[in-house]
Length: 146
Image 1 (cartoon, rainbow, N blue to C red):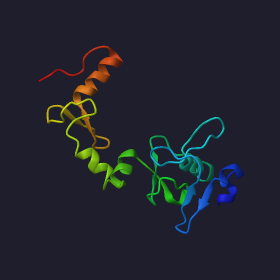
Image 2 (spheres, rainbow, N blue to C red):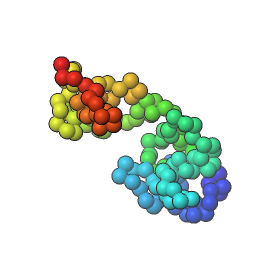
Image 3 (cartoon, helix red, strand yellow):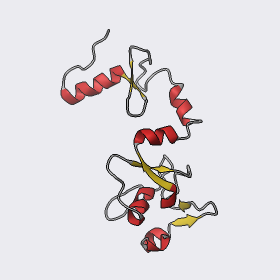
């Protein structure tokens, strides 16, 4: 199946015994491959999936079933919602890092009153920061102190 890809892409993939297709060039800070293609800079796993399988449906993202972010083998990718991708994720380190935090990045304490839980992925959001963001966007306060 890899033969169907443009040569320029094929040359940047290393096939491993695990059947992962590892992107050997630019990897971003999150571990995903990037490649300039037709004037855009897409994630390589998404680019390869869309070239060999089909366009990823709107509102979905690709889950790496092999858990290797540098892998772009379409057989190792499945379109899922963001919430499902987060549920399936390996949070042995990253998830613990976020769940152990007691303050947001601006120093506001996570309390019952000051914490909003997102319905889509269950992540925490500081209500004060959320209010400030709304204020900047629409010009009026969104949140009142209790």
